Image (cartoon, rainbow, N blue to C red; front, side, top):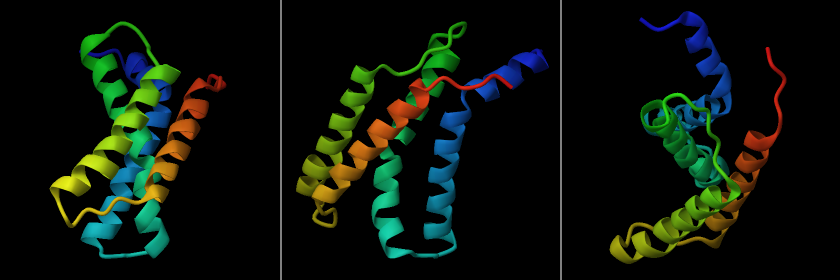
Length: 129
């Protein structure tokens, strides 16, 4: 059985990741299930959250299953690789495969803003509760 204090520390440590994942899921729910559409938010909010969302999933999986007893954060280089990979995949490769997907330079700008913001937030020291 898990120690409750360890679970509480886990939630505190990954607060940023849970917020990013939660925002992404709530936005998709409101857009796809509730059919609430806000043009610019629907166009670029997903792009803004793409790198933080992918990074958060990777980090949670790694720290839960691979590096069980350590707390890790993404380095600048690993986030940069995720940003570049996301840009190439969603703005170059997928539009070539599926004609319904359109490449947009603004998407790359929002991937970049999400990358920089996520890097800054996760590296910023946080007060202990």
